Image (cartoon, rainbow, N blue to C red; front, side, top):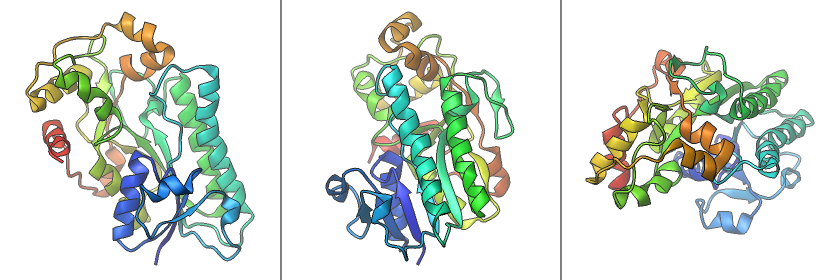
Length: 299
């Protein structure tokens, strides 16, 4: 039975992954700040621990899935929040490395979170071989990946999931829906910025693909192979909901309301292609945006 240690197991992606992995018979242990609350969200068979020191000396993790991270889009980026972004990502990954560096048995595989923010803004398609444009998101993702890369010195295979906008019942789509349902949605700024999206089912399938395919490693773009502009995304969401989606949010308003966060996450974007997964033979379930949205909204 495959043993997996998971951080961020109660988050949007982590919750879905835990449910899928549990159904496959994997032995799951979730590191969580609130084991009681986690019990309400996770399958009953999932073990919950509050500290790494709760793991007994003989515990062996075949795989570490490291998905923890303070949400970036929940408000303005104050210096205090930026420090929490680093603490919940980089510092936690460092603690995981130090923990396993002192153990007799190291994991065979570490799957660590990252984001397409690594690439920074741009209007040209990018893939795993593309360099990043400097900015806070790029520096955060770069440092996070560097922390996870340390596991290679322990003989671990390491995958960094550069995740796009994950579509599902939580996350970005859930925040958009109220306005769009009231016909108040529309493009943000010029609407030309790229939106590299992925259906939650494909996101979970990518994590499982990394587990089951030992030749896959390094940076992996977890995005559908069909990124769109923000204007096209808004039109598709309005079309699926049967609502007009033509009410724009001016860039000035975004900057006033959200500051640096609004500029980097809402007004800028990337057209990210998952070329490494496609070359490895991964088959996406949802390539068409309309089909993905219809599936999610019908659940």
